[in-house]
Picture 1: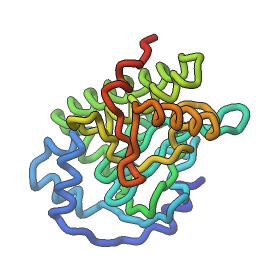
Picture 2: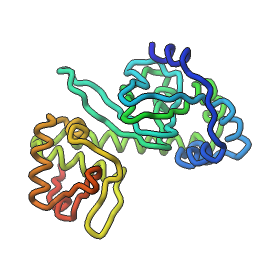
Picture 3: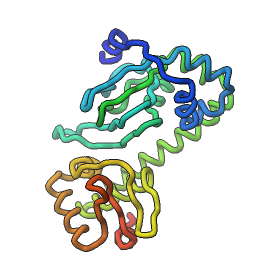
Picture 4: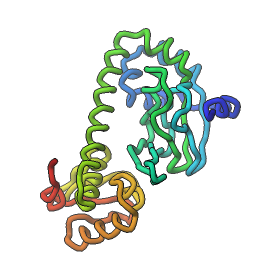
Length: 244
């Protein structure tokens, strides 16, 4: 299993306490802990670097770790029956994953792959149970987290529910804007670098189809590319969003 391979290859690396506190502020069930409790957790965190496109966690791996991102981005994917990659989520710096498998003891529901060179922190299942599952405040935050994950899953089902490829691409961009977007006078900027292939995998369409639809929306003035990196969704883009 990949988790066993990781266990052999992980090396202890150091990061500053200030950086660890920044990470904890973005993880609700850690943010509610006392400085002493966080210091104890920091002392048992394991850190490892991953190269771009390297697999971090395989679907069906045993639940051995809780993961948080110190640097870089990762994508959460599954493969359909035809072997096509379906992207379920993107996690950026200070995001986290792996909590569901830790909580219910079942295998990982998806595969996690590094989108950039990444630095990932690991907390073993035993330490997760010791520090998180025994704390009432943390447990309350975990309940809220699970509700958020469920809402994200509903958003993905909404995308898959559209029959037209154009509606799927629009819904995917809207969902990405809700998670990574910042509202400006001219529209909403998605502050994460996305390729046409990334959008296609989110929308469950081919890359060629996604590129064609994106090109059509750009010509219509609904979207723009900022610095050749970020999507700007203009107000007219949202006017054409369909609701299932």
